[in-house]
Image (tube, rainbow, N blue to C red; front, side, top):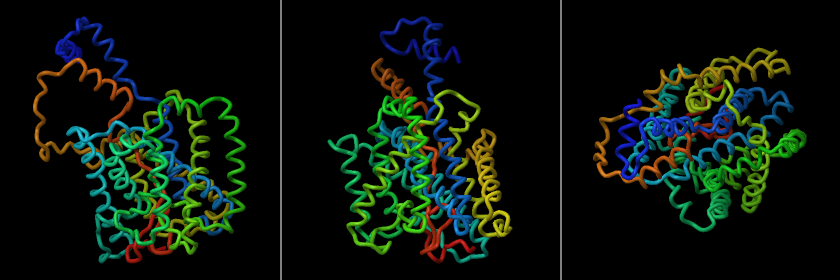
Amino acid sequence: MTQITEQAARSVPGTSARPSEAAAAAAPRAKSRDAFFDNAKYLAIVLVAVAHAWEPLRGGSRAVSALYIVVYTFHMPAFIIISGHFSRNFDFRPDRVRRLITGIAVPYILFEVAYSLFHRWAADEPDMPISLLDPWYLTWFLLALFIWRMTAPIWRLVRWPLPLALAIAALATTSPQIRDDLDLQRVLQFLPFFVLGMVLKREHFQLVRRRAVRIIAVPVFALAVVFAYWAVVRMNMAWFFHRDSAEELGVPWWTGVLMTFALFGCSLVLTACFFAWVPGRRLWVTALGAGTLCGYLLHGFLLQSASTWGWYDADWLHRPVGAVFVSVLAAVAVTLLCTPPVQRIFRFALEPEMAWAFKKEPARQNTTKRDTVRRDTDLRETGERETGEQAPDGEQAPDGEQAPDGTRVPAERAVKS
């Protein structure tokens, strides 16, 4: 390792650092991952799994439904904001495009097929179609992230990226012609959070982590739970899934515009409160933040099994003690699925090398000092692999039926309950 560092130092014109100095300078950069973002991703994926596990319990508990609404208001936006933040430097440089394909597009294809085949077997529906254009269950986020990241250069170019993204999201709610292909309704309605993540700087995240914000976050969350408890029987919860137009929800088109801005504001406030309480130091869960994509994609198989095979049939699970048990079990399960051993097992699907599929990049013999500094700056800013937005969700299910996450699924592909 020292030898490689020495060679790298010698290869940069104009550098005169001794090998030991070069190694010392490289060491901090190699460990530049920000613990805050890893902690935030881990806590968010736990909330994703817990909220999904609550889905079958909502019908018999207004309190669970209220908590479900609160979590769905911010857990998806939090993930998408982080995804946008780590996509702000994306361009169409060959190595970045390659990571986009191997880290997002290929996992999307593999898990879209895997979930469809699993449902065919578990639900005894051998005729259920497999369509890469109609993402099913959890896989919608990977497709959305692929599309969002492809548009990243556009958002860096325009003068007012966030207002433009909000206008697009609002217009999407007025367009019932947008169907399920590519899950575009959800892609467009969640777009402002991705763009917001791109425009935010590290110091903006520091602002919400001040002690005063942490204190304010407590009553804000309490008020959100109280409001959600009131709204459960008065409001269509499908608004929080961002998958339908206003007309599809049975309200006038202008309601969709108003709800776009209202929900964006509510989500932003609760997401800021969530970030305020995320620890910034390294903890035992920090390392799990790098494996949230693994936990996200795998925990869906457990949820599908629970829905298909009647794991929620026991009466005691629909009581308060049952809700607590389900919450803890979901949190433990997704934590285990984020651990390094599980990541290594599924690396073939989540981080395939695929060297056979790409041309070899020509050797860069004349690397300049400016190029090297720029590359190091990119690494320090991102602090992780560029495909690394560890997914979350907010799905919905069959026509009128909700899957254990909120995703839209065609009627013929619905999970039988």
